[in-house]
Length: 262
Image: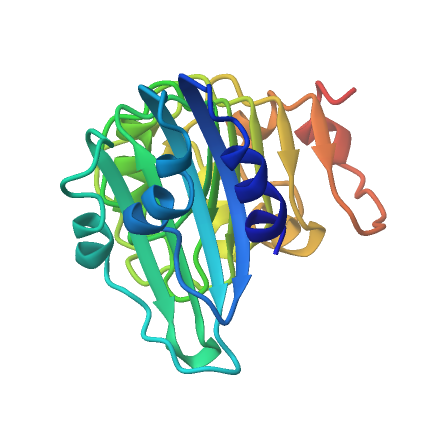
């Protein structure tokens, strides 16, 4: 409601605006995605002097009371054709059982430091300005090869947040070591145990600058065999900040496993 009742009226009053940057995450109920047609008809025609538009608009849609077909990524792309947007990227995911959908539309090349709600519908590309990435998927797990794509497409990533309760299906990881050379913060507090092993075992993903980890205690203790195995020791040995939300009793060898904790 804030987008329709506050943001749109505000933008319509900016009749002399020549350059506009929009970074929005919008929740809508019983409505439609924000696409090229809506953006043009509800905003751009009211700003006649606008000559440069850069945007990232993430729509989360809940249609519980009315029947609206969630549009495909191809339909979203077509809504931008013939209008003054330039190259556009888009990702669409529909959760039929929850009457829920997510749509992210953005200008290319991508100009923002944050990228929110990336899921398995991500189309790929180069996002070298992004430093903070939030990955959320309520339907499918994030497989090892997908993280390889992410490491290539987001080469300067510094902060990564993963929300995914689904176990990985492909446990046979490729021999190619994935690297996130600039990542210093990793939040897997709301991720399945498989992602603990995926990221903390140095043979899977190399995190040379990781300093800050947010995680749940139980999967952490299980994967590291109560902080004794060597597979995660390299990564854990570099941590300076460890955030575990629930209370726990530190085992005897805890400090040896995390010698640099502040």
